[in-house]
Image: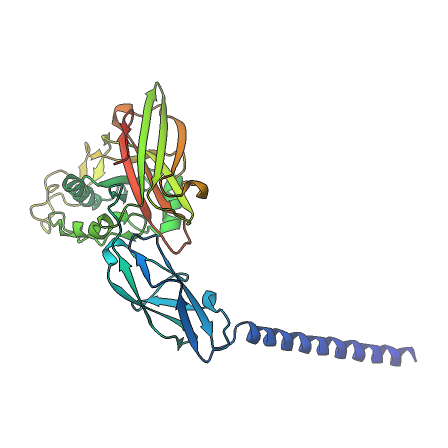
Length: 370
């Protein structure tokens, strides 16, 4: 009697569990289908049809299915045939004209709408560009990129370069690791421009035509400006970095302050020495190791870290200003060779990316907005 009852209870329990599982699976499938159905048609609307080409002013795109459900978050917006991140459409100063916008959801394509861009007003600040140069003293090809960057900066004083060394006596291991992980730096020499894209360098030390890669960054309208005041007090360097806003920005921004050192003498490997594949190279007769190689703009320290501090959104309004003050210990560094570099960039994982502007000043120098 007890055995029969136990068998019955086991069968009852199994059937109950099976039925519950079936209901759960059916419910999950039903919910997935309800929450994210395949639309039969897709349409888009815009909150406006023209925008100022300053990289900040934006058009908001709304995507709806045949039943009027808002599916913007799960659709892909295309501008001139290229997918964008999110549903906000914006253009830089060099993208003036008319543009086509449409949406795609599960290969169901919406109607196409046309938007136009308006020329921005004259910029309040000059546009400067940051080149983060990944290098190493053991890298025999790196003198080429160092030579070229020096030439690029001599030709355009709005270009600023910082050397970030890897696995040598000038390296900061933490900084090297962060930049490799965050920006995918996999080799040296390499140059990251405005934390947006890597320079496609042509490999020829005597061919400076690849300097045109910086052109599109110079053309961007500066929507923020920076000023730096610094004072050397013994082994301390007092730094005030100011960020001024020419427009209101809602995105999350980061401020980075770096201290770099010029005239660092360190032996540099040189693969160009007596290398007949590279005739006319300035390093042809410099030796396999250049013992007195001069390294400029070498990362030394940062009061904000290389990733920066968050700028309060409340300060990011037109004609407003954000001020950051720091004191750093420069013991062991030559203050006469130090530079302070400050820049503002869009925090990672946003639709907008890259550096908005950068400024530099010698340690102990005051440099106003320009």
